[in-house]
Amino acid sequence: MRSALIVALAAALTLGAAPGARAENRADYCRYGQQSSLFLIDRTTPYDEADHRTLVESAGAVVDALGAGDRIVIATIGAHYSLTRRVFNECKPGCPPARNLVDSFNCAGVIAQRDERDFRRHLLIALRPLMSNTDEASNSDIVATIARTTQHPPGARSFTRIVIYSDMLENSQVLPWRDFAAMSPDAALARVRTYGFVPMTRAAKVKIVGFGRLHSSDRRPLSADADLRLRHFWTSYFTAGGASARDISFE
Image 1 (tube, helix red, strand yellow):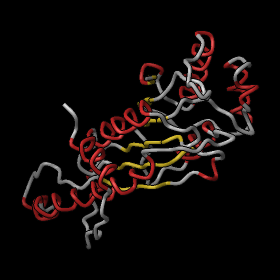
Image 2 (image 1 turned 90 degrees about the vertical axis):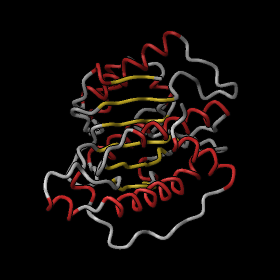
Image 3 (image 1 turned 180 degrees about the vertical axis):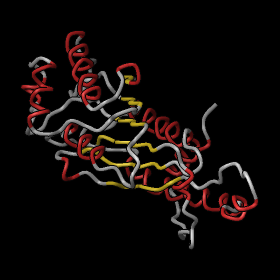
Image 4 (image 1 turned 120 degrees about the horizontal axis):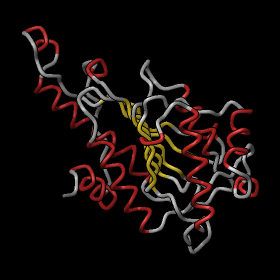
Protein backbone atom coordinates (compact mmCIF):
# COMPACT_ATOMS: atom_id res chain seq x y z
CA MET A 1 0.00 0.00 0.00
CA ARG A 2 1.36 3.41 -0.93
CA SER A 3 1.86 5.82 1.96
CA ALA A 4 -0.29 8.92 2.29
CA LEU A 5 2.76 11.10 1.72
CA ILE A 6 3.71 9.30 -1.50
CA VAL A 7 0.19 9.87 -2.84
CA ALA A 8 0.30 13.52 -1.73
CA LEU A 9 3.71 14.01 -3.34
CA ALA A 10 2.52 12.57 -6.62
CA ALA A 11 -0.50 14.88 -6.55
CA ALA A 12 1.61 17.89 -5.59
CA LEU A 13 3.96 17.27 -8.49
CA THR A 14 1.03 17.23 -10.89
CA LEU A 15 -1.14 19.97 -9.44
CA GLY A 16 1.31 22.07 -7.46
CA ALA A 17 1.27 22.62 -3.71
CA ALA A 18 -0.18 25.82 -2.37
CA PRO A 19 1.78 27.30 0.53
CA GLY A 20 -0.02 27.72 3.81
CA ALA A 21 0.49 29.95 6.81
CA ARG A 22 2.78 28.59 9.49
CA ALA A 23 0.96 27.81 12.71
CA GLU A 24 1.55 30.42 15.36
CA ASN A 25 2.69 29.54 18.87
CA ARG A 26 3.48 25.97 17.87
CA ALA A 27 4.40 23.74 20.80
CA ASP A 28 8.00 22.57 21.23
CA TYR A 29 7.36 19.12 19.80
CA CYS A 30 11.08 18.43 19.49
CA ARG A 31 11.30 17.67 23.19
CA TYR A 32 9.08 14.61 22.69
CA GLY A 33 11.16 13.06 19.93
CA GLN A 34 13.49 10.09 20.22
CA GLN A 35 14.90 10.00 16.69
CA SER A 36 16.45 12.39 14.20
CA SER A 37 16.47 11.68 10.46
CA LEU A 38 18.61 13.13 7.68
CA PHE A 39 17.45 12.84 4.07
CA LEU A 40 20.11 13.91 1.55
CA ILE A 41 19.14 14.31 -2.11
CA ASP A 42 21.85 14.33 -4.78
CA ARG A 43 21.13 17.05 -7.34
CA THR A 44 24.21 16.52 -9.52
CA THR A 45 22.77 13.98 -11.99
CA PRO A 46 19.68 14.34 -14.24
CA TYR A 47 16.79 12.12 -13.10
CA ASP A 48 15.01 9.67 -15.35
CA GLU A 49 11.58 8.18 -14.64
CA ALA A 50 13.03 5.43 -12.44
CA ASP A 51 14.90 8.03 -10.37
CA HIS A 52 11.76 10.12 -9.96
CA ARG A 53 9.67 7.16 -8.82
CA THR A 54 12.31 5.91 -6.39
CA LEU A 55 12.87 9.36 -4.92
CA VAL A 56 9.16 9.92 -4.25
CA GLU A 57 8.84 6.52 -2.58
CA SER A 58 11.98 7.10 -0.49
CA ALA A 59 10.71 10.47 0.73
CA GLY A 60 7.41 8.90 1.74
CA ALA A 61 9.15 6.10 3.65
CA VAL A 62 11.38 8.53 5.55
CA VAL A 63 8.45 10.66 6.72
CA ASP A 64 6.19 7.72 7.50
CA ALA A 65 8.83 6.40 9.91
CA LEU A 66 8.78 9.57 12.02
CA GLY A 67 7.26 9.47 15.49
CA ALA A 68 5.89 12.35 17.52
CA GLY A 69 8.61 14.95 18.03
CA ASP A 70 11.15 13.26 15.74
CA ARG A 71 13.23 15.69 13.72
CA ILE A 72 13.71 15.46 9.96
CA VAL A 73 16.33 17.43 8.05
CA ILE A 74 16.24 17.48 4.24
CA ALA A 75 19.30 18.80 2.41
CA THR A 76 20.85 18.65 -1.03
CA ILE A 77 24.14 17.29 -2.35
CA GLY A 78 25.78 19.53 -4.94
CA ALA A 79 29.05 20.17 -6.72
CA HIS A 80 30.65 21.39 -3.48
CA TYR A 81 29.63 20.95 0.13
CA SER A 82 29.35 24.73 0.55
CA LEU A 83 26.51 24.66 -2.01
CA THR A 84 24.39 22.33 0.09
CA ARG A 85 20.90 23.70 0.77
CA ARG A 86 19.03 22.70 3.89
CA VAL A 87 15.46 22.93 2.66
CA PHE A 88 13.63 21.52 5.68
CA ASN A 89 14.38 21.20 9.39
CA GLU A 90 11.43 20.56 11.68
CA CYS A 91 10.13 18.11 14.27
CA LYS A 92 6.96 16.21 13.53
CA PRO A 93 4.07 17.49 15.65
CA GLY A 94 2.41 15.00 17.93
CA CYS A 95 1.81 14.26 21.60
CA PRO A 96 3.44 11.44 23.53
CA PRO A 97 1.18 9.09 25.51
CA ALA A 98 -0.21 11.13 28.41
CA ARG A 99 0.95 9.83 31.78
CA ASN A 100 -0.84 12.43 33.86
CA LEU A 101 -2.92 15.62 33.67
CA VAL A 102 0.20 17.76 33.30
CA ASP A 103 1.16 15.87 30.13
CA SER A 104 -2.34 16.32 28.74
CA PHE A 105 -2.26 20.04 29.48
CA ASN A 106 1.20 20.56 27.91
CA CYS A 107 0.29 18.94 24.60
CA ALA A 108 -3.19 19.31 23.15
CA GLY A 109 -3.98 16.52 20.70
CA VAL A 110 -6.34 18.58 18.53
CA ILE A 111 -3.74 21.32 18.11
CA ALA A 112 -1.02 18.74 17.42
CA GLN A 113 -3.13 17.25 14.62
CA ARG A 114 -3.56 20.69 13.07
CA ASP A 115 0.17 21.33 13.37
CA GLU A 116 0.97 17.97 11.78
CA ARG A 117 -1.10 18.90 8.74
CA ASP A 118 0.82 22.16 8.59
CA PHE A 119 4.09 20.23 8.95
CA ARG A 120 3.24 17.94 6.04
CA ARG A 121 2.22 20.88 3.88
CA HIS A 122 5.54 22.62 4.51
CA LEU A 123 7.32 19.35 3.80
CA LEU A 124 5.59 18.95 0.44
CA ILE A 125 6.46 22.52 -0.48
CA ALA A 126 10.13 21.87 0.37
CA LEU A 127 10.30 18.55 -1.49
CA ARG A 128 8.42 19.50 -4.64
CA PRO A 129 11.31 21.39 -6.34
CA LEU A 130 13.67 18.48 -5.58
CA MET A 131 11.58 15.73 -7.14
CA SER A 132 12.91 16.32 -10.65
CA ASN A 133 16.27 17.37 -12.00
CA THR A 134 17.39 18.01 -15.58
CA ASP A 135 20.82 19.48 -14.87
CA GLU A 136 24.15 17.75 -14.50
CA ALA A 137 26.89 19.19 -12.30
CA SER A 138 30.58 18.85 -13.10
CA ASN A 139 31.28 17.54 -9.59
CA SER A 140 29.53 15.56 -6.86
CA ASP A 141 30.90 16.41 -3.42
CA ILE A 142 29.22 13.57 -1.56
CA VAL A 143 31.87 12.75 1.04
CA ALA A 144 32.27 16.28 2.37
CA THR A 145 28.54 17.04 2.28
CA ILE A 146 27.68 14.00 4.40
CA ALA A 147 30.54 14.76 6.79
CA ARG A 148 29.73 18.44 7.25
CA THR A 149 26.00 17.79 7.64
CA THR A 150 26.39 15.02 10.22
CA GLN A 151 29.22 16.69 12.11
CA HIS A 152 26.98 19.69 12.81
CA PRO A 153 23.43 18.37 13.26
CA PRO A 154 20.70 20.85 14.23
CA GLY A 155 19.85 20.80 17.91
CA ALA A 156 21.75 18.60 20.33
CA ARG A 157 20.70 15.24 18.87
CA SER A 158 22.84 13.34 16.39
CA PHE A 159 21.14 11.68 13.45
CA THR A 160 19.82 8.21 14.19
CA ARG A 161 18.71 7.58 10.62
CA ILE A 162 20.39 8.73 7.42
CA VAL A 163 18.86 8.18 3.99
CA ILE A 164 20.87 9.28 0.95
CA TYR A 165 19.37 9.43 -2.52
CA SER A 166 22.46 9.28 -4.74
CA ASP A 167 24.43 7.07 -7.10
CA MET A 168 27.36 7.67 -4.68
CA LEU A 169 29.78 8.33 -7.56
CA GLU A 170 32.11 10.78 -5.82
CA ASN A 171 33.75 13.39 -8.04
CA SER A 172 35.17 16.18 -5.89
CA GLN A 173 38.35 18.12 -5.25
CA VAL A 174 39.33 15.63 -2.57
CA LEU A 175 38.35 12.54 -4.56
CA PRO A 176 38.10 13.19 -8.32
CA TRP A 177 36.24 10.41 -10.12
CA ARG A 178 39.33 9.42 -12.13
CA ASP A 179 41.08 8.68 -8.81
CA PHE A 180 38.06 7.41 -6.92
CA ALA A 181 37.16 4.90 -9.65
CA ALA A 182 40.64 3.38 -9.65
CA MET A 183 42.03 3.60 -6.11
CA SER A 184 41.48 1.03 -3.39
CA PRO A 185 38.76 1.67 -0.79
CA ASP A 186 41.41 1.88 1.93
CA ALA A 187 43.40 4.51 0.01
CA ALA A 188 40.24 6.55 -0.61
CA LEU A 189 39.31 6.40 3.07
CA ALA A 190 42.83 7.49 4.06
CA ARG A 191 42.41 10.58 1.90
CA VAL A 192 39.02 11.29 3.50
CA ARG A 193 40.64 11.12 6.94
CA THR A 194 43.41 13.49 5.85
CA TYR A 195 40.87 16.18 5.02
CA GLY A 196 38.73 15.62 8.12
CA PHE A 197 35.67 14.39 6.24
CA VAL A 198 34.82 11.39 8.41
CA PRO A 199 31.09 11.62 9.22
CA MET A 200 29.43 11.41 12.63
CA THR A 201 27.30 8.29 12.25
CA ARG A 202 27.54 6.57 15.63
CA ALA A 203 24.45 4.37 16.22
CA ALA A 204 22.89 5.62 12.97
CA LYS A 205 21.09 3.43 10.46
CA VAL A 206 22.27 4.37 6.96
CA LYS A 207 20.30 3.65 3.80
CA ILE A 208 21.62 4.49 0.33
CA VAL A 209 18.99 4.66 -2.41
CA GLY A 210 19.78 5.01 -6.13
CA PHE A 211 23.09 3.14 -6.02
CA GLY A 212 24.33 0.97 -8.87
CA ARG A 213 24.32 3.06 -12.08
CA LEU A 214 26.93 5.18 -13.84
CA HIS A 215 26.68 8.84 -14.85
CA SER A 216 26.61 7.91 -18.55
CA SER A 217 23.68 9.00 -20.70
CA ASP A 218 22.29 5.46 -20.77
CA ARG A 219 22.81 5.15 -16.99
CA ARG A 220 24.18 1.64 -17.45
CA PRO A 221 24.85 -0.52 -14.37
CA LEU A 222 28.18 -0.50 -12.57
CA SER A 223 30.55 -3.30 -13.41
CA ALA A 224 30.78 -6.04 -10.79
CA ASP A 225 34.26 -4.83 -9.78
CA ALA A 226 33.23 -1.18 -9.45
CA ASP A 227 30.10 -2.13 -7.54
CA LEU A 228 32.12 -4.17 -5.03
CA ARG A 229 34.79 -1.50 -4.52
CA LEU A 230 32.26 1.30 -4.08
CA ARG A 231 30.22 -0.68 -1.57
CA HIS A 232 33.42 -1.46 0.32
CA PHE A 233 34.46 2.20 0.41
CA TRP A 234 31.11 3.59 1.52
CA THR A 235 30.67 0.91 4.15
CA SER A 236 34.15 1.73 5.50
CA TYR A 237 33.34 5.45 5.36
CA PHE A 238 30.21 5.14 7.49
CA THR A 239 31.70 2.63 9.92
CA ALA A 240 34.67 4.98 10.38
CA GLY A 241 32.10 7.46 11.67
CA GLY A 242 30.67 4.98 14.15
CA ALA A 243 27.90 3.18 12.26
CA SER A 244 27.63 -0.59 12.37
CA ALA A 245 28.14 -2.40 9.06
CA ARG A 246 24.90 -4.34 9.64
CA ASP A 247 23.00 -1.03 9.74
CA ILE A 248 24.21 0.11 6.29
CA SER A 249 22.15 -0.87 3.24
CA PHE A 250 22.34 -0.19 -0.51
CA GLU A 251 19.31 -0.12 -2.79
